[in-house]
Length: 276
Image (tube, rainbow, N blue to C red; front, side, top):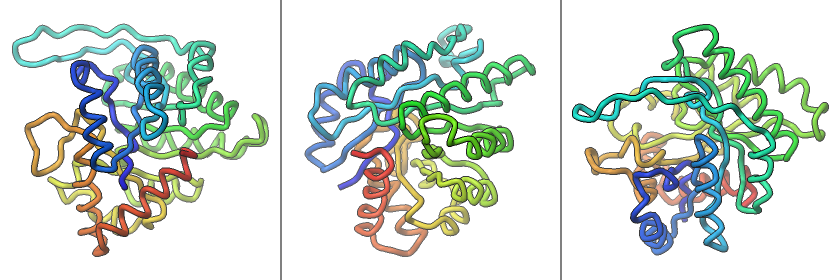
């Protein structure tokens, strides 16, 4: 059994065949967590998860790029457009979280690849901190998105790590999804009790090998981040939760252990973190 801990079948890329893909995943003993990036995709993730008694779960949250206005380049022939920022409405997300299929708050964090001003950074930090507080209130783990902002993410986590008694007696816990930080960043996250997760990008670059070797397997999860970063041998095609197997096999190769061991331990890690 494998668990794709970060999928996006709630995105428009899967609007016509999400159910069919989920059925294929079940036939291959693959479970998944569909992760929201704003209210509408969070709501859709919950709606999808509620169709299934087990095997499909949801995370709800406001992605940092949706906390600010930003330019979206669709492709070479489609015009660009400007995305409006979403104000994080804690009451709406709290209501969504009443579903028993919601297992995390996410994806949340900081993304400085889109920020142009100090105002943008402040808006992202405000949304990030508000969602950390919601996760603590609801005793849920959270899923961190970080790009070009590890120093600020870790500073915020360290700030709240020392204040866990203030809200619901809940210690911070969660996962840094699509981990791209340094070994030092990873160790700081592990010291606070967080896990890290890797995607199909590890199948076509060696940039992550050293970090994967250093991080204990008991602290690693696997994901696709589909429909993005499709692994080898499916480069150029839409990514699917089915392809999480190739992430697991690459980690097995890098760590020089069996695929079966990777499957067993990463699945256990996911079940323990998300309580599924």
